[in-house]
Length: 392
Image (cartoon, rainbow, N blue to C red; front, side, top):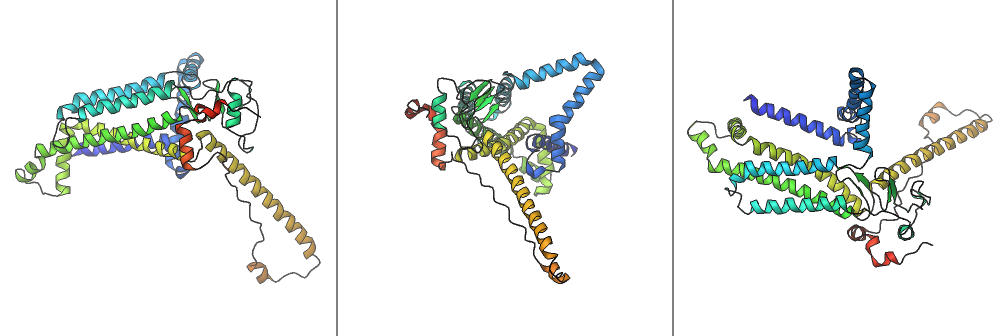
């Protein structure tokens, strides 16, 4: 019975590494070992690797590694796109070769053979649309329309010129250093798509996330039904309880059933676990971006608002501390002329520290969740009114 526990340990370790890598910087994990693992995976391990390369192969090898890093991280390249195609194509081929022989089964009908082709094809189409569509490039020809469409809030967006493009940078736009262009309603640069996510392709990106979340859930559920159908058809539980005298309880059956499944359907189990983990990660990422769409906010803007609120809170705290200090100095000078208060009165008296001013996120682009969602589905630049806009 060591094999099931070894699989559980391997799965737990894999889940810990994946969660630490993707979610280790979340506030909930601050100060925990998950954050430490994330720091090691994202920066510490790479620094140690560079030192090892330099010590063993010299500075030339280290410069070569840095050049590869610059190409992969700071320039447009199709590496992650090819990786995505390999994951999707490889997973589907493995499922076809190892699991389609159980379709139709006790719980799975034959039409799932053809439905799987449709859902994977739709995912590939959404991937192509997100990767190769224009994210909303700002040029000298359309900059005036974008400036008119997205007003400056003078909080996180102020009117200024892009130092690279030499044009006014519209509100909500950003110059992507990887693509070397200004993108309207810039969200982020996605390495998986080898493209920026902006005003015109956010709809495809969110649809891609939602569809792949459903795709992974669909695959995991179908594989689970295949396994359950095989247990039913081959009467595994009946044979164990009747012919081998195993106690008909969860604690009695689980070790034997798990051993049989790992021996006969280990591929289906590993695929189902893999798809389930990916579905959970995609579900969180998908929910985050749906929330951004409903509130008419981008990833870039959310970071800007975090920085703004952080610095405003520090400024308000400093202002409150200065007011307290000023009040204490003036109070000390007036109290010098008065008799000292009793110790009990001083002990029970409340501090007169003034309350800090609350910092409010005033998102002028939020016009209600329905209109926000419609703006993502039909971008402003694709409406008739956009071509008639002119900058004041």
